[in-house]
Amino acid sequence: MFKRIQRIVHVVSGVVQKVLTTVLLVVLYIVGFGITAVFLRILKRDLMTNKRVNHSDHWLDAEGYGDDHDESLRQA
Image (cartoon, one colour):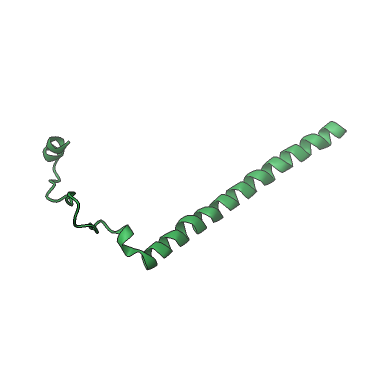
């Protein structure tokens, strides 16, 4: 009888653990990524753009790439 109760408690605690983990990870994802993205968009817009901020470096923005297959193979 004690083994049966112990097995039932083990199964129920496993299910509760999976449900709580899933709920908490979803909340963490929404809070972590969602609010961070909102703050970045409000406070630091230059972090989320593809434009160069520092014009003294030697890197150039990519321009003029073709869309066809042969052009992609040539560039690779």
